[in-house]
Image (tube, rainbow over all chains, first blue to last red; front, side):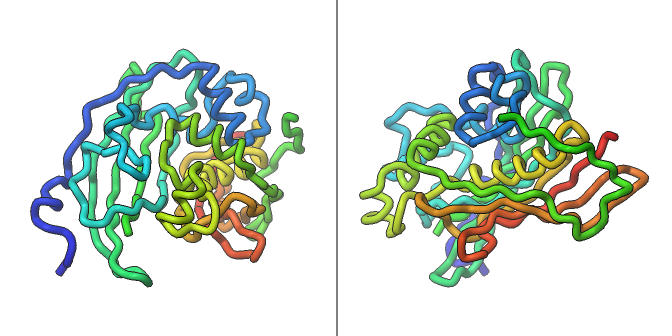
Length: 151
Length: 143
C-alpha cells in the first residue's frame, strides 16, 4: 500500500499532453552537437540530427513565472506530488527514422505510470512519460519513455 | 575532427568485443551550453550556491541526459557509417559533478548474424571505476 500516492495522484495516469509541432533547424542541430561535444562532422555541420536531438527540440518552453524555485518547469501533465526534488532517472528510446533539418516533427506525451519505492534515505516516487514523435507523413520517428525520480 | 575508422564486419565481431572508449571532462562552459540548448533552468546545473546550500550537492550536477548522449556517441563513433542505433535503454544511477572526468565504453553481449543486430552494454564510468550510467543498446549493422 503506497503511503504517498493518493487516488487523486493516480487518476493522472493515462493523461495526454497537447501535441507540439516543431521545425528541425540546422542551427539548433549545430548548437546541440557542439554542446554535447559531438565529434562527427555531419552533426556539427547540421546535415542531420544526432540521436537525442529530440530532447532539446521538445523541451517545454514555459514563461519564467511557471518555473519552480529550483528552476524546473511546472509540468501540467503531472499531479502535485508530495516529494519535490527531481533526479534524472532513465530513458528508453526507439529510433525508427533519421531526422534532418527541415523536418517538422510532432510530439505527444502520455503519463503512463506512477509508482513508489523505498530508497536508502526514504521514499521515492517514480513516474514515466511516453513521448511519441511523428513526422508529417504520420510515421513514428522516435518513441521515448522517460522515468523521473522524486525524493 | 571527424572520426575516421575501419569498416565493421559483423562476421569478425564476437561477444565480449569492447568498443573504443572516450574520456569527458566537462567544464562550466559545456554545462551552460548544454542546458541552454535544452532550455533547462534546473538550478543544480548552473547555480553553485543553490546546488550546494539548498540541495546539498558538493558541486554543480551534470545533467543526466548529457551522459545518455555520451553513450550514444560511444556507439555512433564505433558504428561510423556502417550501422545505426535502433534503441537504447539507460539509467542514471550515481550523480556526477563538474570537475569529474567520466569515461564512456561498451561491450558486445549478443550478435544476430541473420538480422545483423548487435546488443551492446554501454556505460559511463567515473574515475573511481563506478558505473554512473549503465545502458543497453540494440544496433543494426548495414554492411
